[in-house]
Image (cartoon, rainbow, N blue to C red; front, top):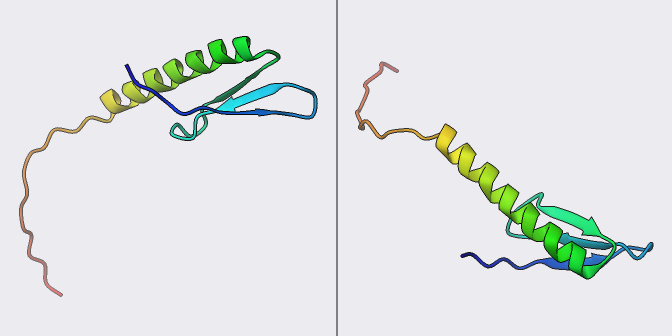
Length: 72
């Protein structure tokens, strides 16, 4: 279980907008706070799922370190 800080704002039309500063690009909007809460939870879950997939795809196995000499 992880906990995130959610920034909630309201635009000029009364629409609530939520964003998660810790997760760049993770945001959503809704007409009610209850709906906003459901949507931001879903957005966070999807964000973390995509990030986990990226980590799996870009996994590299450590092989070793070596020195290389070149003429300069």
